Length: 202
Image 1 (cartoon, rainbow, N blue to C red):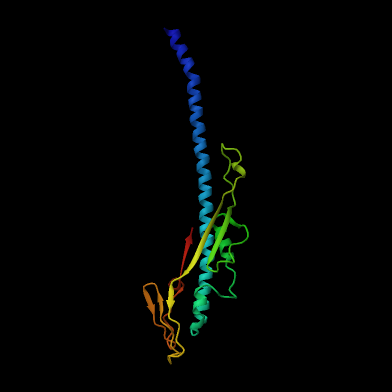
Image 2: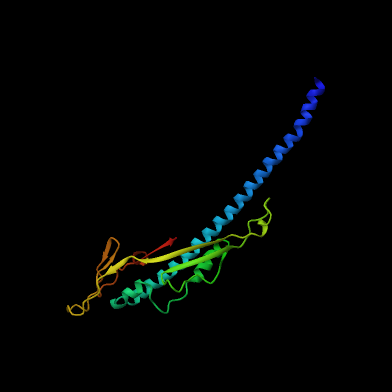
């Protein structure tokens, strides 16, 4: 009986080692998946921040251009639609925010010519996934893409040149708020968040 008992224990030991090795392998595999997911999430965060930053910079420039042309409502619509020449490039803000999130902008820039109110940004992480049980992860970097859009929030009725009120500014309707602009008192004006909404898009 004693001999058999020790014999059974000896046979069970290799099985125990195999099971432990399998569990360790699974643990390292899950760790590798977690590393990859964390790197991918970091890339997406950087892409989202970069796209939003570029769009917000352009929104602020459009607001400045609107303020410069406040007494010329004939050009308001073009400004609100982003159809403005001479603005400074905003992609530097995308790169800045990507840098702050340990990534960098890749591809052909971040401002599609076909969309004056949209920025599509692709980023790549500065650091790879790192060493893991999965071969090749030490040289694998994550990339992600995000698109941010600027949407005008305001509408107005263009002034009627024949109604004898050419000097009046049209009422600006921005969401639930109306702005009655007085050319003689321009102390209360809508800000960038009132004029435009900036958000991520699919």
